[in-house]
Length: 339
Ligand SMILES: NC(=[NH2+])NCCC[C@H](N)C(=O)O
Ligand SMILES: [Mn+2]
Ligand SMILES: [Mn+2]
Image (cartoon, rainbow, N blue to C red; front, top):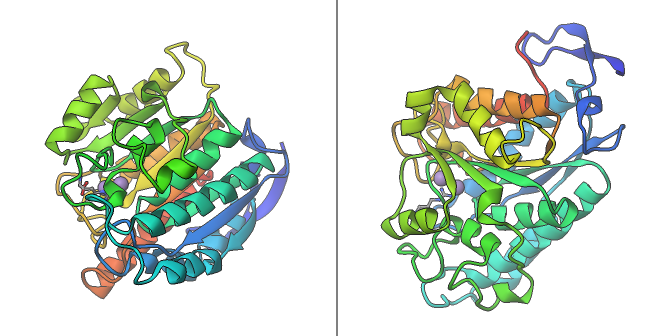
C-alpha cells in the first residue's frame, strides 16, 4: 500500500494516511478522480441547480479530495454550456417531456466523458446539476464496466417514462431510459441510448416519494428498493449490506463494480435543505455518509454522482450546509474516514 502524507480534511492537520486510490479493485494503481462539473438544470423547472458544481468546487472539494491521497482533475462546464446555448429557444416539448433535446444532448455528452474517464482507469465524480444527468453518468459507467451495479440514493425513484411522467421533468425519468422501459424508445433519445441497465442491476436507498405509475414499474420489474421504512426497520448497516448482497447475487462476495448516484434529496431536508424537490423523513447526516463510507470500503466503486444541490434555494446558511454536505458525501465515498 502506498503511504502518502496528507492533511486531515476536517482538522487541516498534517497526517500520514494510506492512499485511498490504491485500495480500488477496478481503477488503475495511480488512479485519478476526474471531477465533471455539470452546471445543468434542464431536467427540471427550478433555476439554480446549475450553480451546484461551481459552489462545490468553490467550497474546496478538489483540494479536499487531493488531501485524501488522490490525483484530482477538474473539467468545467464549457461543453454543456455550449449545448444549452445551442438549443435555447428551440426545444419545444415532445409529448410530456420538457427540454428533451437539451437533456438528451447533455446526457449524451456526459456519457461519452464518463465512459472515457472510466476506460482510462480513473474515477469519474460527476457534480450536478439535476438528476437527468444520471442517464449520462450510468450509461458511461456501463459502457466501461458492463457488469456494474448501481446504488441510487434518492427520495424519488426517477423511473417515470415519457408516458407516465406527470411533471414532464426528465430528472424524474433517467432510470427508465437506462432500462429501455416501454415508452422510452423515442427521439431524440433513441439515437444513442441503449438499454444497458437490467432491473436487477440497481438498488434504491432512501425512497419515500414515489408516483403511482412508478410504483407499478418498480413492482413489475422486481426492482430492489430500500425505502425509509426499511432504513428504520433494519438500520442503515443492514440495508447497505443487503443492497450489496443483492447486487452481488447473494454470493457473499463483493466483486461487482458499483456506481453510486447520490441525489442529495435522499437526505432529510434538515440536512440538505437546498434542493429542488425536498421530502421530509429522509436519511440522517450519518446514514448518508455511512452509505458512502461503506461503498468505499468495498473497493468496488467505479463512479460517483452528487446531484441536485441547488444553492439558490432557501437561506444562505441552508445553501452553505447543503454544499458542505455534498462535499463531505463525496469525500466519504473517496475514502475519508473520521478516525
Ligand atoms: N431527481 C429528482 N429530484 N426527481 C424528482 C422527481 C419527482 C417526480 N417523481 C417527477 O417525476 O417529476
Ligand atoms: Mn430526488
Ligand atoms: Mn433523483
